[in-house]
Amino acid sequence: MATRGKASPTRLDRKKILLAARRFYNLGHTQAEIARDLGISAGYLARRLKKAKDDGWIRIFVDADREVELAAQIMAKYPHLRHVEVVPSGSTPEATARSVATAMAVWFDDLLDRDEELAAPKVQRVAIGAAWPQRLMVEQLKRRQNRCSVGPTSLAGSQSPQLEQQTASVVATILAHRMGVFGAHPHSPKLRQYLYDLRLETPTNREELARWWKELERRADYRQMREFWRSCDVAFISAVGINRAWPSTTRQLATLGVSVERLNDIGAVAWCAGVPLDAAGQVVPLLCDTPGLYAHGLPDFAITQEERAVVLDLWGDRAVDAVDLVNASFVSHLFCDVLVASAIISP
Image (cartoon, rainbow, N blue to C red; front, side, top):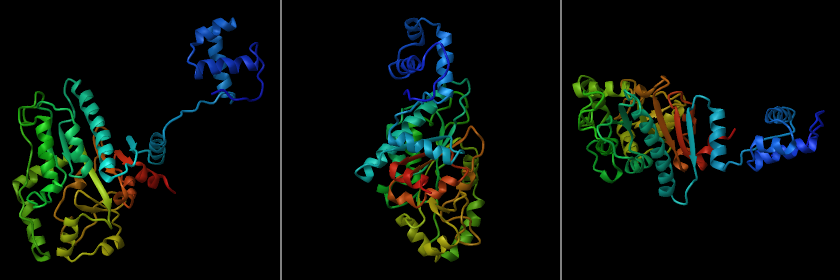
């Protein structure tokens, strides 16, 4: 867009420079066409346009939609984020969740497409949560053959009666089928199956918890799961504010005799993969002898290497209280809706 400013001495007067700028930037004419009409060289015109822009005669505006503008503001505020995508807040929670899911599916498909062009693909282990957008995302992913190993982000609920709420283990199994991991991987023969599906008999009271945790750490399948988390290439996680716990989490808190008010007092800001986190992404211990609730492993997602990705989705009013988690350095990719994005960039 051409704007007026102070005159500049040149054999092209100010009016002609602004007209040339309008033709080039607004109308899409080539510099060669404009230069020919003005009787000058294209090189000279390019220099004059650059000087006019440097002098403030020309300002370029990108007429982006609100979502793009919000994403740009979030990335400016949190430079550690490598990718931010904002979707419209839908008229229903399902509409919003589906929009977030679609954006994540497009991103993940594109990531895998580019990765598969490499002689030795780098994305080999993927962990996924059970939040609504993650479940919907799996449905939209391109089917692939022998692509990568998959595991859930959480141990909680492998045998949950609330099957309609699909646990992370269930969603991971579905994703594993879509990624074709039950056959040998062409570039890594060791990746032959869905890597783990830990079966747990979780404790029902506080007294059993410490003993249960010590026994769990001695299990070979648990150690295999921890190794999977430590070497994970992409992890999809979700979060809600600490005051908006899932029903299963509320019951587990009651079992432990821990209140949400207590979690607020000790710095917890969000529930993520079944554990309470502070704004730095660190687990807030519920009891001195256990690092988490009935789920564990999220600290192993504290991925600092450039090529790894922790993908966080925040959407709807349940997530507004969790926006402080965007501060956490382990989060590298963010997908959210306008409601949450507006809260993130608020002072």
